[in-house]
Length: 323
Image 1 (cartoon, rainbow, N blue to C red):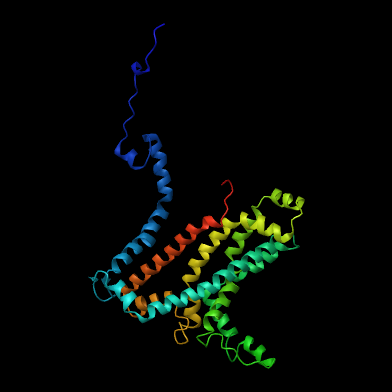
Image 2 (cartoon, rainbow, N blue to C red; image 1 turned 180 degrees about the vertical axis):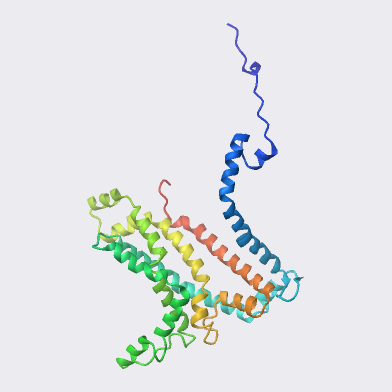
């Protein structure tokens, strides 16, 4: 029997796509119609991304290389704004250091508190949904309103905290009026607002995703509560911890509202955070070019912190399915 060569079979030429079908990523005109409908549904989001996020970001990147105020046209100065930030701005390193100090206080406390609260609320408690709601309510409070309330609570003369201290014979404590205590006091406010917020809910979701058979196997082996937490719970929720850690660092480094309302960066620049420095340069001194340069430096710092955390996460983060 003669062999049939596959090379002799007629080859079907691929259908030619028009420019329109190629543009929308479709294989044919029929699929192109569905693709266009999908793009139309996504069009409001795409326009919002371009107009309100990508556009201003590109504009600020350009302005960072210019000397620009509201009244004058941008004048190209190259890297002068960046050189001024690192070499000629006395408050640059001060504000950056204050921000790092605040983040070092807030992030570990908030993560540990949120995890502990999530562990408690993950137990079979009577009315636990009510407790979850009560702990989440402070997170819904506007930061400005929260700062005003805490400004009264920590007032050195009229605040309830100092009233209690005086009633037991202790001196008044300068929560927000001393440069050595203002950042720990602001960290206390941030801890109160953030410990029962989104991070708690994310930890709860992670805890509820831990397979029960792992705990049952640990019980059979006679593991203690601490051993189960250390060898089962922590590894299984480590991706959740990494996610909360990155969001916590970014959120703490961007602190603005609380300090702006409660202290205005004082006393004596004791709470002069980097976001306040950007705001002052851009919107009080109208140095929009220099303020844009500071914002991009800040963005690079946050990106570096995020990449470092992702790089070292393989040492302590466990993903199911990986060997």
